[in-house]
Structures are given as C-alpha cells and as structure tokens.
Amino acid sequence: MIEYGSETRRINAIVNAGARTMMGDIRFLEKEIQKWKASPIRKAMILAERYYRGDHDILHTPRTAINENGELAPVKNLPDNRIVDNQYQKAVDQKKNYLLSKPITITSKDDSYTEALKYVMDKRFLRTLKRVAGDSINGGIGYLYPYYSTEGQLQFKRFSNYEIIPFWADEEHTELDCFGRLYELEGYEGETEKIYEFFELYSRDGVERYQLEGSHLIPDVLHPSGAHYLVEQHDPDGKHMEIPYNWDRVPLIAFKRNAYEIPLIKCCKSLQDGINLMVSTFENNMCEDARNTILIIVNYDGTSLGEFRKNLSQYGAVKVRNDGSGAGGDVRSLTVEVNAENYRAILEIFKQALIENCKTYDAKDARLTGDANQMHIQTIYQDIELDAQDMETEYQAAFEDLLWFVDQHLANTGQGDYEQVEVEITFNRNILVNETELIDNCAKSVGLLPTKLVLQKHPWVKDVEETLKELEEEERKKMEQMDPYQEAFQRGHPEGGEED
Image 1 (cartoon, helix red, strand yellow):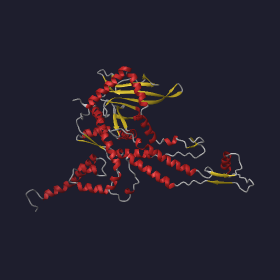
Image 2 (cartoon, rainbow, N blue to C red; image 1 turned 60 degrees about the horizontal axis):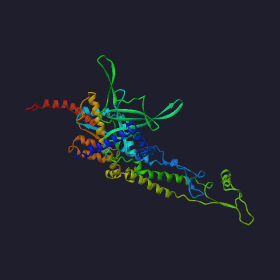
Image 3 (spheres, rainbow, N blue to C red; image 1 turned 120 degrees about the vertical axis):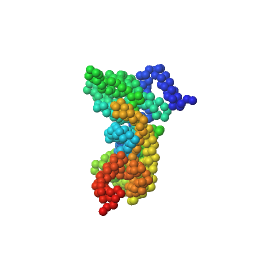
Image 4 (cartoon, rainbow, N blue to C red; image 1 turned 180 degrees about the horizontal axis):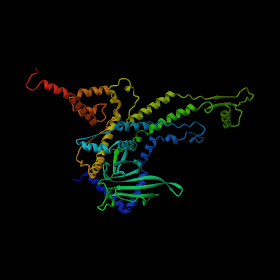
C-alpha cells in the first residue's frame, strides 16, 4: 500500500527535479520568482495589507459623469470627496485581539520545562506572534523564522507573507521542502537612490543568497551563502572559531487562518468598497449648494455657461436681461433633495453584512446593554468564536513545529532534553463575560473539580501557576500563625490525660 503523503512528495520531487534538470536550478528559481510576483495569492496579500493600512481603492477612483459621447469620464468641476470608513481594519483587529490580546498559557508536567518555554516565549515573542496573526488574517498565512540573536538567544522573526515563496512537500501544505524569501532594500548607486531586490533560498542544507537584477539571479557577494546559524567556539589553543550548523528541518513556521489559507479581504472587499462609496457620495451630495448644483437659466445675459458659473462663484450674482417680449430673465435651481435616511439604511446593511461575512461581532449590539447574561454574550460572539476555533486548530499545529525548534535549542545548550514532554498551549479568548455569573459557578465547583481547573475558568486569574503558588504561600502562613495555638492546646490536653 502506497502512503498518500509520501507518494505526493515523490511526484512533486520528480516534477521539480525534471524542471531543474531541463533549465538549471538558477533558471528554475528565476521562473518561480516571476510566477510568484504575478500570482493572485501574492496580489491578495498586498491588497489586504494596503486595505488594512487605509489605502483603499476609493482614494484612487475619481468621480465620474457621463460625457457628450455617453461614456463615463472623470469630472473636475464637481465635489470629489473620497472617504475611507475602514471597517475592514476593525474586523482584523477584533479577530486578532480576540485570540491573542491576552497572554497564552503554557503548562506541562515538568516545571523546569515550563519555565524554559516562558523564557523563550516572552513578551517580545507574544508581540511578534500578534503581528504574525495579523498577517494570517490579512493574507491567509503568516510566517515565523527561528534564529539566534547576537547574544546566542533563540528568537523568532516575522517574515512578511508576500515575501515568502513556499515550496510545499504535500498538497495539504503541512510540510516544506524549502522556501524562498524575496525582499527589497533601499540603497544608493552613486548618488541615485535605488531599490535593490534580494532572494534567499532556505533548505535543510543551509541558505543560498542572491541579488535579483531584472529577472536574473546573481550570487550575493556581500552576504555569501552558508549555514542557518553559526556557533562561537574556542579550540584547545584558545583560538576563536565559528562553527556552521543547520537545523534538521526547514526553518520556517507557518500560521494559517484556516486550512484553505483564505485572506479575510476576499470575504469583504466589495462590502468595504460599498461603504466607502456611500459615505463619499453622501458628502459629495451635501457639498453641492446653489453655486455648484443644477441651475435653470432664462434669458441669461452672457456668452457661455462657463462664464455664468464663473460670475456666480466670484460675485455670488448673475446679470439677466429682459428681451422686450415680456418674458423676464430668471435663474432658478433644480433642487435635488438628499435623503440622509436612505444613506443611513444602506450603510447599516453594508456594515452588518461585513460583520457577518468577516465573522466578527457588533460591539454596539443592544443585547450587550444592561445586565446581559452569559447566554446573550455567547450568542453575539458565536461567529467570531467559530472562526477563532479554526485559527486555533491551525495555530496549535504551528506551535508543535515551533516547539521542535525550542526543544532542539534547549537540548543543544544543555538545558535538558524535553522532546518527549507534553505541552499544552492555551489561547485565552478576550471575550466579554458576566463576571458575577462566572465567579458564582467557580465557587460552586470548588470541591467537585480540581483547583487548577477551577482557577483556569475564573475571570480574575491571569496566571494559574502563579495563583496556585500564592494560594500555597497563604496557606503556609496561616499554618505558621496557627502553630502557637496548636502547641498551647496540646500542652493543655496531653495525649491520654485530662486538664487539671
């Protein structure tokens, strides 16, 4: 029986090997780079990043009107407000903070291992992880790269997802054969500012570094190819050496939004554009006053409509004439009423549809007012919770890959072999809760459930292990305070005797 995953890798290897044989490794990479630059996946990632930062299509779309040929053409003599109401950014932040605004909980049966993991996954790591989560929501996938700092500390760097060209070993995208990183750096050529493109290929054998000139790869002479990292050592004579080492795995950890790596922008771009268009159109209509709206002109004493508009805008008045036939001149405006309720209604429809399509929640939901019970709160958070469960499933798998690098680091630095120790990573949701109800439930569970499990559900507990230590310390102090009374009681009631 042929294993599906291994068979897929074998076929991919044959195809890639054939391609490389026919056109050479370098030419193969050049083709892959050009294909990646034009790929819809990369374009969607860049689009999502642009929309998150507030650079929406409405800002690059001029107002149009029908010209004399019956075609839409840009107009410059009408209000052209371009407003961005960035509901997409709000949706991304809600999903990111819902899962990662609170510190993750790391637990294992080995306390020394738990402390070692907390040291590696410090606040700096959590900040980086949160940015990667933003990448995975925005572009469908985010990446962490393990590396060693100058102090020899294992750290993790975020790679922008649109810079990474993954070469997957399987169709499910769970294992990497290798990956390329295509990035830009600003520099100078003489006195002319120039953007340079660089490409790095990471595999189990190390890193190959190139500079991209046009569509051709040239070896990077300033940063030559080499190992994943260097370890400083001294020989018996005290001579300083740097020993190259490679990880046994491709050094990249992928954090996916879901199994299909679908960017959130694909769920709501048209809705976000509709919101921007409605707000901009409403402001344009409100800005059209008597001097720049539709005018009905009778017996105008002028030469052209352009001159008429100029006189109206400069002097606030126009001169009309009487042609002697009894028909006096006149200027009247054709009033176009702007019904704000219509705009408000369509905006409400768009915003609600964006919330539902992005699987977020409405923080202004009427059910959250007053004394909302926990059932109402869970109903409001139902969609974002379902999406968060998908994200957590993918993130838990990513953390298994990440912990492999941490375990290798701990073993290589003599801190212990923890590869077989089980670890539990808990994501603490940032969900609004009815604290009174939860605390009451926790109190009723004391004695029925382990104290550690009860503390994990308590809304005031941030670190379960630290809270347990504080409880043990309080109990110890109480026992110390009770010792003198117990000794006095025992002196007054000796075993087998009675007090006189």
